[in-house]
Length: 195
Image (cartoon, rainbow, N blue to C red):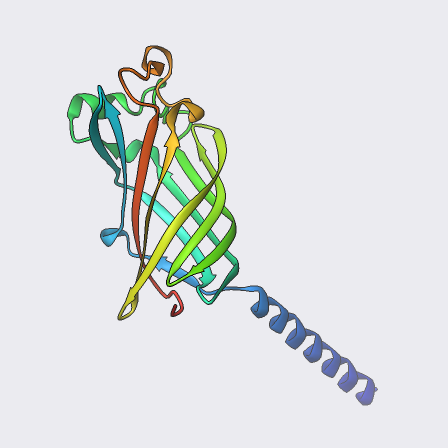
């Protein structure tokens, strides 16, 4: 009976060790977003004049090894009610149904499907961007720089607002407000492995 008990214990320990090793092998270290130092902004054109705005609340989960990024993931959630153009009248309009409709769609999101290293701290991150319930596959170019214990992931990309039904009804007229919107970001992270 003692031999049988010892054998069972050894078998359990071996199974736990194997399970632990398997779990560790698939997990990438998760970097932490430094919210106070990070920014997500957007630039649209009204009557041909660039107008800048920003999102004040967002969160990111970044888990990948820059030296072997293929198995990593990036996920981002943006609080759409935090959008601001810096003009009170315009800021009051953004949450309404024709624009971000934050009552029905409080968050926008991006979730990666593939990460490709281009060398020199540059990466292409492919994934799905969802705004106002509408999704588009995009590729986001990102450059990562590192200093001390911090990494900064920065880049920009362009979307068409009408593909996401942002600016409906009378605001769909692109002679007033352009269809193209440039998104710019700087995400400061701790805990990302060295380049």
